[in-house]
Image (cartoon, rainbow, N blue to C red; front, side):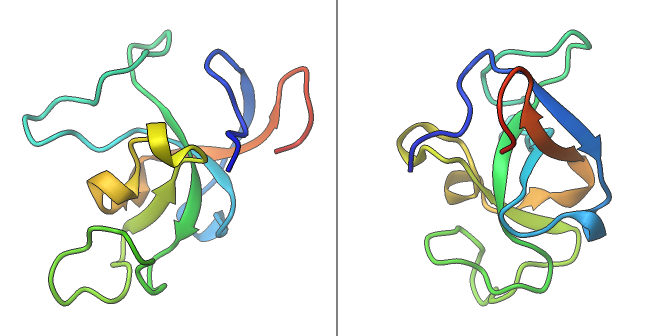
Length: 119
């Protein structure tokens, strides 16, 4: 899949709770920490926080998609978690490598690229 956004693109984001997020939405979220307690490498915003922009593939209660590291015997996405995927699987740190992302770290849904079209 061709990436929807490129490095440096700016997006308009509407804050949303998890129950307002749908499969296929492009969300802005804080990434989970790596095993050493640090964020994955990447640029940080003006507030010093790191943000990921990913597409929602599964929400709590949905079946875990194929190819997602979920742990033994886990068939459904647990409460408080979500599966997110980057549009460029060759160069994306997402649920394929990191498993579930914490749903409470969603800032909101990206509505459109500033100066561009809707996502």
